Length: 171
Image 1 (cartoon, rainbow, N blue to C red):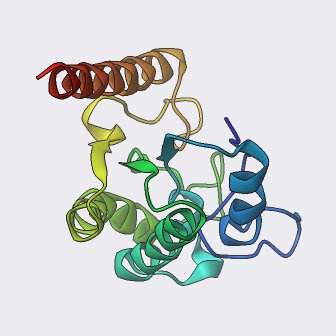
Image 2: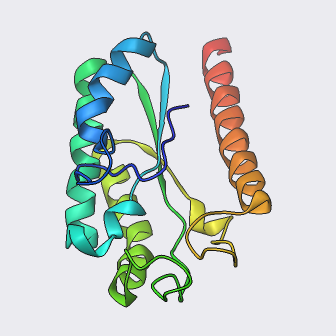
């Protein structure tokens, strides 16, 4: 797992190094090689106002990351997960002023954008927003229940996919 608070698909953060996923992913793929499966879930931080990104532009960043994975090894299975939606009040002063109302709107479009990308590139797909919501505490991160729900959804998906592989191998 290579989660890092503030990581984006392709955008730099002027105040924190190492947040641009496209700059670190090739090294991470090589470090962890060989890989059978990559689970890719980025996009929330791409919605920050200073990135000026539409859902489509964020999708282009995700496509770049998928290309980097496939360049490393075309046989790697990719599970693309669209992130949870931002909470309606995330932009208010007591939460995170790096987001605004438009950020919330963009976050709600990522599920459909990522689904199209998954179809285009033959990736598996899950929507975190189908199983988790942002916490009331900060309106952008999952709470313990959300993390558990997402972890269970990913585990169930991967176990089911593994069972399908076993079925095909035994036929």
